[in-house]
Image 1 (tube, rainbow, N blue to C red):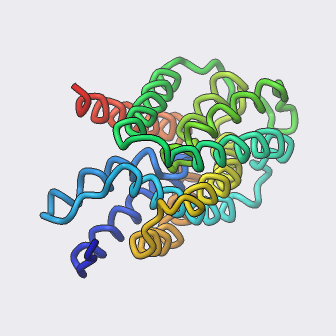
Image 2: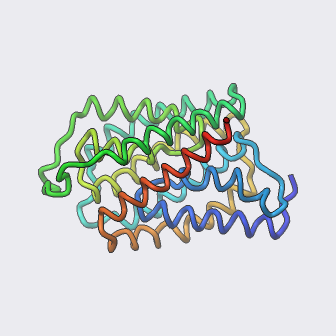
Length: 260
């Protein structure tokens, strides 16, 4: 595949926009960039990526996008280390299985998994959360076995589509585990960083990554993700939840309309 200057600029803008949003709302960015990479280049008359290529680019990009986000949240007490350890180890194993196993799936199969994940996340995000932000950070507790199990299953799906799974993890942490919003956003970035290690390793081992687009997306992520994380600290938590819910719902609708 040829990569002209226009192609590189378009990829950079996709990476910048998606990474800024991901840093702000605590996701790895694939919920935004997966459909953008699939649909935007052809609008400019550029070559279209396959679902496998998009998932490979996304996997590498998310790895670097989440580093910037975690760094921005390293202070303030929002990173729950116990939550990160339990969910991180489980999602790492699951994401490697999904990333490696995705080589045996068709493009349609990869898109189908993405559509299912986005739909589940959209439904969960619109379910009301009951006063989770009233819980003091030092008093936050959660079911460790449930957290690990849900992270493992999420990791398999995330590894398949080259995501880190944050767009599923965030509603799980808010709705099921009852983690306060800002702790969810910060901790999910750390967990998705761990997840992206597994999915990236699986994609590299099966040759699903295009080097030049991945590098362009990485550069854009390193610039935009910390900016988004800093912006997220100053935005009302209800606005952050609403923004994420709208993004997930829009993506789910677009993916499913392509199947029918």
